[in-house]
Length: 511
Image (spheres, rainbow, N blue to C red):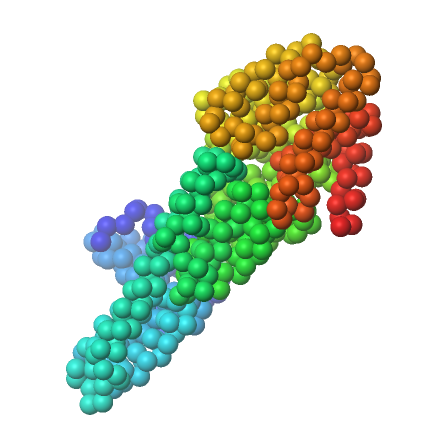
């Protein structure tokens, strides 16, 4: 077996002090005290426990050294298997499978059957269905030679069929999960015809089981995860929050750490979308702890992901809470880390981060910087922008022009926006806020007249509020549009955005 040149040193370097101590004791138990094995001496040299002057190459030939390295590598793995007995269900079951095979081949089927019974119960309890199938095959083999078979062959066959059914259901749900994640990546929110298509291909699919039809904890996890994403995409955020709350503790050790982290991030998103900002900040801390627990912090991908989520939600939350000082700090930190993670951030995450930076600058009253970001996104990434992000940039531009009192450009900007929205067949259902507002601002309005200006601002406010009020389970808050209400109110009251946001949040948190 060929290994990379540094595989052995990498393995030794990864060991904890407890693991190294265990290996030394493990090796001593099978060696002579007065004469250490060559692989033990090599371990001590590579671990730095003896001086570099101890040149082992003088003790044996290059071929013997190569064999010693291979032996050391294999014994390190054996030692680790023993060290982690009782700490990992999968390791325990795999070890039991080895023992079953050894006892079976030594003509001790009764002893093998005792271990099989324990391991089968353990595998079923922890939903290790792949291992269950291996154990069932051994049960059939042992029953052929044992005096008293554990059960009939048809019963074992039914168990196999049931286990396969669970695996197929999980596989189906994983496929639906992949489908809805692709929808989310491409479209963000779903309204109109897109909502109908989304439902048909995910939660309304013939393949999608009801919760009571799910046959394992893993299946229930994916069922709830898919429903959380679906309800988030159609603006039913209380429902999304209810489903995502079940994902924090998945109830199955077979859930991949990456999926568990994604589920927790979905719960953070759902928390933000109903204004549960403190819960969202706590969720960020919890997800970072899980990253450490699953050792994902050694992955640049997850370090980048956590930066993106942490930064995004800090910008959103502090903006809505009107905490101007905290928001300034978040902006500064985000911009510094953006340079660090620039090459590892996906285009989608970069777009989301830049969009929230743009909104954050509005929150601290720096519209000039917000407009600079708007220009960099709108004019340089139009072909790769997610549809909902691009649509929002048109809306943001109209508000920016209103705020800056650049009224002369409003009609043409509004006309461009309305043309963009109208080119989609589902415009009236997807752009229930954007389309009427852009059409309203194409009109000939005397913005220099305070009464006329106040009238149009109140009309804009009414359109947004009507949409938010009509959302089911949205807590009279919508993460995407409520910031425009705050912005309009700041214009109407001629007050800083942060001051109006703080008052708005005070009212929300009392509900």
